[in-house]
Picture 1 (cartoon, rainbow, N blue to C red):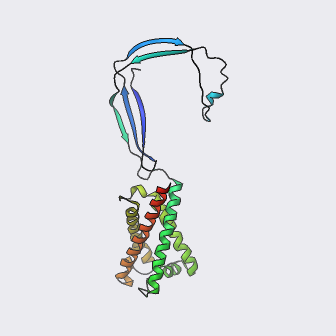
Picture 2 (picture 1 turned 120 degrees about the vertical axis):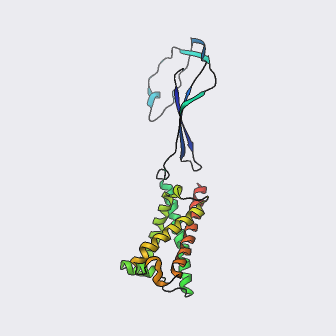
Amino acid sequence: MGRTQVNLKLIPDVDGTPAIAQLVAYNLCDIQVKGVWSDPARLHLVAHVKAPLADLPVRKVHGGLFHGESFSPLVVSSGYWRVYPRRFGRIDMNNIVKGVLGGLVGTVVMSALMLMKSAMGLMPQLDVIHMLSGMMGVSAAIAWVIHFMIGAIWGALFALSYRAIPGASSVVKGMLFGVGAWLLMMVMVMPMAGAGFFGMVMGVMAPMMTLLLHIIFGAVMGLVYGKENRAV
């Protein structure tokens, strides 16, 4: 009992995943043994699938050895460590499914706004479905399917990177993620579609309009993801 002992404390985060691991080394001081004696005893074994000790054929318990002692409060030694987990944490398929759901709902809202924009005649040259169709050489129907697949992929990536994204709420995190997705679109997809960096070939309103759509997409995705997490 006088030797240094070590305890591992696992402190969970609000969502139940491990947040902090603490290795605490401590010593028991002023140990005073009050007595040691033998008495009748009972043995109670609990069945466990990974430790089948309870399956042992115990026929008779002859007795037990007991001891009593006193000691001063625990004194934590210098062996104290705090270990923080990785920012991304472990892959949780439930969270990925929630992210995909949020991405699909966000894509539905974004698509509705895109259709409203087209119906109002605002910036007809900014047609994401037409751009996807031309880039990949597919029909408009296939382009719509690809459009929603991209939304689902963004949702999965949002779930995987959720802990690393700054923000006090899932909506704020989603909006920041949407800005990041917009930036990738501006520097990668737009030049591939022939619209130039940030789509400036279509005018200054193109990046502004797509930024607004992506922020709304991210906000809806974050809102759905946050509600699904609270519902669990």
